[in-house]
Image (cartoon, rainbow, N blue to C red):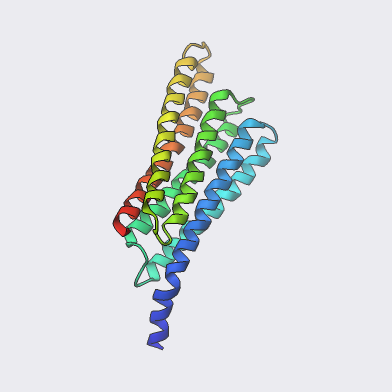
Length: 212
């Protein structure tokens, strides 16, 4: 009976954690894809926000499952702190993507603009790189490949910084104070999602270095 318990702790959990992270990364990509569609085709806003919330809830469930596995697993394929940090950082991306979409709906935004679309596409590009890097930590046969993905996420975050700066500069040339407040919040939260992508990249880079 004890032997079976140990096998359940050790052997399956290598696969379980990586499977969960793969699912979480895929969920984040789904949210980013929907975000791009949301800002490019700003229609059926309420319906798309509902779909986004469903994706966010799915991510919460996966994150909860990761923590549950962590709490009951004796030996893990990565350090428990690494697992916790990665799960939390991936969930943060989802929260910002969902939160910004819900914000746009609650603010009563009637149309999107080029800056929102560009920031959403930068988020999408970032999470695609993250998904590839997450897949790579299963075996870490090629840590350089993981590091390259992480460097690209960092580059995309720098681009998003520049987009945000220009968007706010243009925004403050307008006169409508309420619109300025609303759009500034939205721009900043979209850019913050790229910051969260960079946080994930930093965690993945640390994992690749430590376990290669």
